[in-house]
Length: 274
Image 1: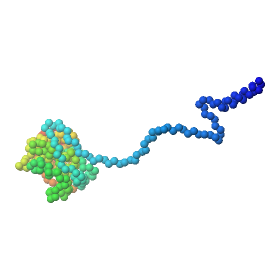
Image 2: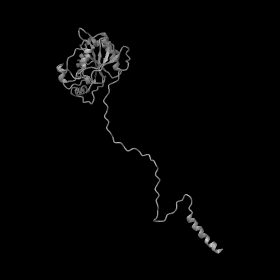
Image 3: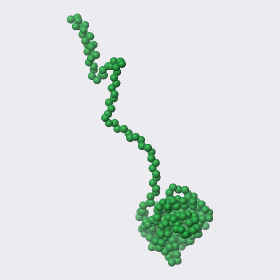
């Protein structure tokens, strides 16, 4: 019985070494350690590799959409664009730099002025085909051609019945007034000769168009082409040559008086004294 009593602690000690507690790792002998690798999930979402930076060219400006209906009841604007292509774009940029001293990446303007003209042609179609070529036709207007090969044009044509035709978007550069093209919208009225004098319908339509434009742009100046040289001493005048200018008589004081009579409430700035 005494032997059994003495062996009992020994048996208990051996059992404690062979039966481990649940959840506890078995001890390892020094020198025989075994490392169990961490379990790797079957699928791991990894972030996509960084993409290289790609330079994206800025898209060229697109022509403006057709004008929304004007608040002027009698004003209707018809789009009939003259030719706009890479040649006209390039020549317009050259004109801006050579004549106005402005180096730009696109031939655009921020209009603050409207200049009224007379085409001195009998029909809208003849005026349209005069403005349509991007380059001034060979042999025509040699004085103007020496200054630039860019053809003359305007943004709008007003026909003799008061119909308004848009040739170019208002913020696109057009060659129509020396020294002021860079900030001026040009409106050409068909006629202006003894056989086809400018009339009341055109004065009314021109005024309605100017009112419409003044609602879209910060227009501060309205003048006739015959008045443009009065701006030579103003900050708006940009012409790199002091000898490049022309004397103009269109559309005339009488026509401008009719147009301004419809616009007195807008209080445009007066034309500078000569």
